[in-house]
Image 1 (spheres, helix red, strand yellow):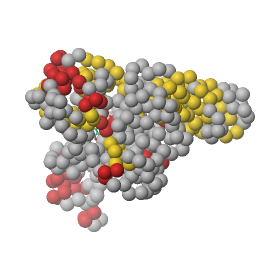
Image 2 (tube, helix red, strand yellow):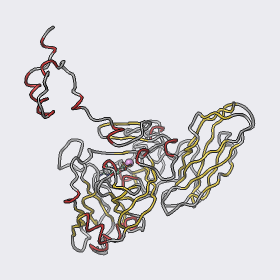
Image 3 (cartoon, helix red, strand yellow):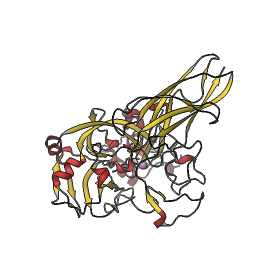
Image 4 (cartoon, protein in one colour):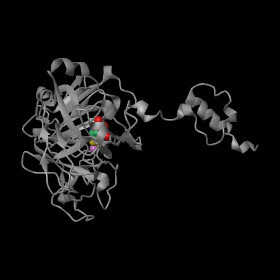
Length: 406
Ligand SMILES: Nc1nc2c(c(=O)[nH]1)N[C@H]1C(S)=C(S)[C@@H](COP(=O)(O)O)O[C@H]1N2
Ligand SMILES: [Mo]
């Protein structure tokens, strides 16, 4: 056999260094072969995700759920989507982790250790809905660049932490305070330490809400690394990009925060509707704040079959950004007529609400069940698609499942 098919000594040296011990039959490694020890571990094991979760991207990691996986009232880690813009911090040292409060409008910059945060301030627990602004992007035409989320970039976990308000008030801020901006420990894809992956924020009014947390627990345990361990912002009801993970610093700004992904097309929508594909001027783009009303049928799974004469019990969740969902309906005739579902109140503000209904079908055949939520201002989900926008944000179209009555 031609020896060029085997790896060269220099390459073997590099591999040995990477593995950290002698590769005993290293000379026999076929050229181009990648050693198992140097491959990324499988993401389902690495992040403790269910194997039905869908990997949209591995650099950076972006993983979404399917509708039927989101059936739990409180989303467990294994079904929680991951949305990363950069690389997960590699070494998190909890003992030396600090949170700095600074910015133009802080009275006096202050640094807290994690244990100070936990002991100095009262702890609160809320269920909070986090939906990526790009959830549903895959349906827009012309298509928008970015992760092609279908319906699964939403979660409602139980978050425990201290109120951001209590920390900001402890540091103190002046009347100049307009906005907060976060700074996090994740690494830019280029690995350039001068580049910030994402640094977003929210107006003071949102930062000071009771439910805006600096969280250190998710569902009663340490936050999983991929979801922001050891400290993350959780601002329910707003695009989840406001909920910074791996938080190290929060700046109290005297202007609208201008960090990475606050400007241009990022998390911004045309202030007024535009035609599909139209170019939108920078000054005509507005920052996304409260997310629009939306719902998801989480049971049964699309494609389910039911015997003629039996009732189908459907269930799912509905949410409406800062608002409450006041009505949940379903249709089995492509939106011609609508019937009410029963709808629960949220356990706390900004938590999703659970709905259910028992559906009768008139005869054998193919049906679609469409779900439509209406918020407390009377706004309903659009049946098909909402307005096109350059980055494919805020697709809150009715969720639909296929049913066969046999
Ligand atoms: N530091 C940091 N925080 C971040 C992000 C990120 O890439 N880095 N992504 C944001 C976006 S766009 C979303 S949708 C949510 C996703 O949160 P999750 O991965 O815990 O579901 O985190 C937000 N916080
Ligand atoms: Mo996002």
